[in-house]
Length: 184
Image (cartoon, rainbow, N blue to C red; front, side, top):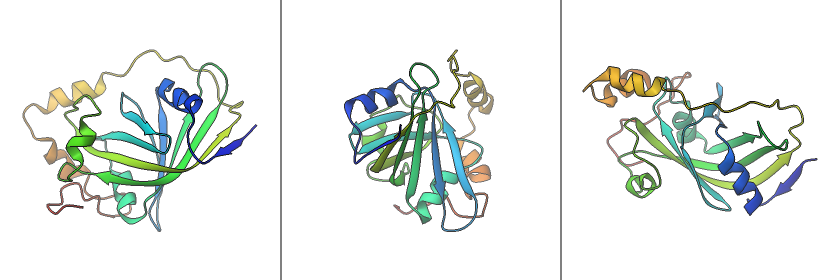
């Protein structure tokens, strides 16, 4: 059944790299707890204790707001094919914004995305596996094309306009710092 580790091993890294979907959980000191599904080619395992993922623009920006106040994060991966398994990673994370010194370094790990708003740099403190017996089988068909259509519909309008309207505060009114001028 479940096991605990201090860091990832090669089998767990292979498991992560096989997944098409992962989930991220964050919470500020008070208020709404957020769990976000993440897809696309947006995650890189840099070492046994470090993961970076690309946070593309969405309808909210809860993760960045929560990390600005409380840097705890949980990541979860589920096997939807093959052998059953759930993998949870517990640790600390920070949001890296375009104005931050390591933006270019982290950006070099990914195919450029026109709505990249943060990279999340995650340090693993605890790794836990569990059986996953209750997770059903699902077949991956393809990525959705809705994002490409949405980007095209924006034309020449800068993505910052959308961030200004929809990504500056969390559900609880916490700042996300997405458009701050100073270095975070």
